[in-house]
Each structure stands twice: as structure tokens, then as C-alpha cells.
Image (cartoon, rainbow, N blue to C red; front, side, top):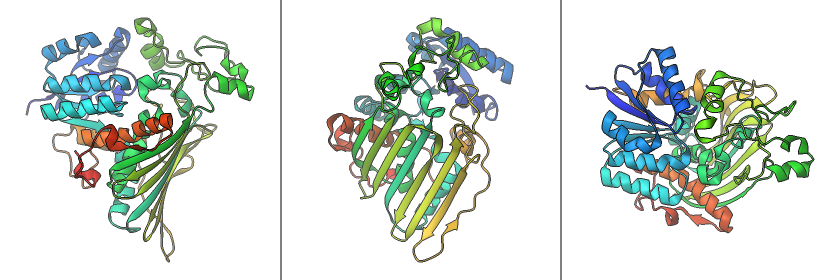
Length: 448
């Protein structure tokens, strides 16, 4: 079998997680044939990393304007999209029409028209779009799916999901392009797509209606001034400023990857990776709640806070025969080391500090803790399992159907898109009024 030829779009921190398995474990079956980014500095650094870490030959590099030329010259079989969220749709659609399959980082895109355009391009071309929802692949989350599917608490009627981003992780979304709604869709799309996808998949259900509230109550200049924290608003960016004991400061000179990927690349396009989280102009929310109803009648109550002193999530499922509680907390920002670089910002372990556990509370019986083996590795062991499904020649059978295609990717982002619409209008929003999902489908597993 000829090697799969992969072209990577975007060379920020996350792309490395998609390149590493291809140039190590699955090297015999894959070849990285192109890298595309708006920054020549980042592209050069990636080629240095590939040579130094994995003895890979230099990979041809391209600018965004040269996408079509890249396709013609390098003939990739698969395009891996790891660029800014607002650009995903353009690269996905062009890759599909060029005859390529696509693997895209979440979210698939950020608004309803772009989502509809991706679905139309997939129908027209018949090519594959896979969305890399690594949360599905964590062992604890898979166990939750198994417990629900095998009837441990009977039919589930309602779900409550609370997610907390601490002032280490959560603040980082307010330093960079994610803090602009037009670039990321806000945290209800960029971050919550993980959570909405998990609930869709856990319930094997398709969302139908959303009502939401969202506010910016902590970050941004006005909030800092109202609290009397004017000392944190002095400098528009952190690197090079005498920030002193500012707990929100990020110094791009502190690690090689920050320096090479971002500080030295600023001349390529002016992107600042370390903007003050209390600057004016931030237009995304840092506190969000949503009520989601599914086609099959279940209800999700959801909350996300991005300024918490602790990091993690708590999910509860109420069923006709009992209740499941899933707890995943990393701990407080006071007992976790500051992340050393972008490659580690989202690689929180799943068993440190307060830990991860699942407890089942059956009706009229004692509760019990579900035994689970350790799950080492990035994203609680999820990345390794997901990479095997994405890149192995013959992936092992997956009875829990964790791979997500374009329609399942749409079902996730449409909850966040509908939530944003609901916040703007003050009204509930029907998902199918934004982008219709197959009307005959009642289960998520019936979507591609």
C-alpha cells in the first residue's frame, strides 16, 4: 500500500500533536508532504523540529495564498487542518473539491453559513471529513458511554455538565485570537464543542433546541477597573513589560517554543500571543450557561466559567434507574506548575491532584465506584488512542464509535452556534433553523 500523503495547514502548538504520531509510530504508512502557514518563521521552526527530533527531511512549505499550488505540487491524499478556527471552512472545502480527505481540529467551523457550506461540499465530493474530538477517546469518558449504553441507570432523562477553566488555562483564551468572536466563535464554539460533543455521544442523541445566557464578567478592562484591579491593566502585552507579580502575565521569552513560534514570528503578520487579558476590545464571554433539548427528549443543563481557581468538570446523569456522577478535576492553579509552552497548555493529565472517578448510584441500592486503570498520556490517554484510529493501517474495532465525521462535527458546533444566537436575541433557537441535520435521524450514531 502506498503511503498516505499528509499536508498540514497551520503550524501553531496543536499541530505538533497531529504530526508526531505520523513521523514516529505510523511513519511507515504516512509521509508529511507539505506545511502551510502565514508565518515563514513558524514553518522554519517546524522543519527544525522535524529534523532534530525525528530525523525527518525538510518538508516543502507554503503560504496561504499558495494552497492550490501546494495541492498540485505535493498531491496530498489527506489535508490536516490545524489553523485558526475562522479559516477551517475555507481549507476544508478547497481540500474536498481538490479530491482530498480531511482531518480537522475542533471546532469544524464557527458559524452556521460556514457549517452549511462544509456539509454541501462533502455531499458534492463524497470525500471524508473527520473531526478530532480527542475528549471522546479518554478511557473514563468511554466508560461513561459504556455504562449509559448498557443500562446501568436505565434511560437517561437529564444531564448536568459544569466545566471550570482556571485562571491559568482559561486566561490563555483571552491573550490570543480566541478572544475575538469573529475568529473563534467564542468559548461556546471553540471550547464547548468538546463538551457538547461528549453529551451528544454519551446520549447517542441529536440536539434540537438551545436557550443560553453569556456575559463577560471577569476579563476585559472594564471588569478589572470595577474590581479595583487597575494595576493589571497597565500594559497591552506582557512580554518585555515590568509586570512584577501579575499572576496573568505570560512571557514569550520563557521557553524556546513560545519564542520561536510566536515572539520571533511577530514580524510575519503582527500576531501577538501574549496580550493583556484585561485590555479593551475583548468580545467573547467568560461565563456561559445553556439549556439544550434533544430530539429524543433528554435535557442538558450546561455551564462554563473561564476564571475559576480550579480546573475540571463535573457531569451528572439522571436515569430512570439511578444516577451516574463523573468527576474530573486537575486541581487549583496554586498546585499546578505554569505550563511551559503551547504544546502543554491543553495536555492536562487526568489523574493528578483531585483526580478522576465515576460513581454509580442505583435506585434502592448502595452506590459503587467504577474501577478504572491508570490512563497516562496527553488528554488523559486520549491522544494515543485517537491517533491509532486516525493513522493506523488497520485500527482495532471500536464498539463505541468514537470517530466523528462531518455531521457529528456539525451537531456539536451547532449547539454553541445556537447558544450564541440565543444570547444575542434572548430567544430559544432551533438547531435545524440554523443548519438542518438529517430529519429522519433520531440518534447521533445515525449521523456520519
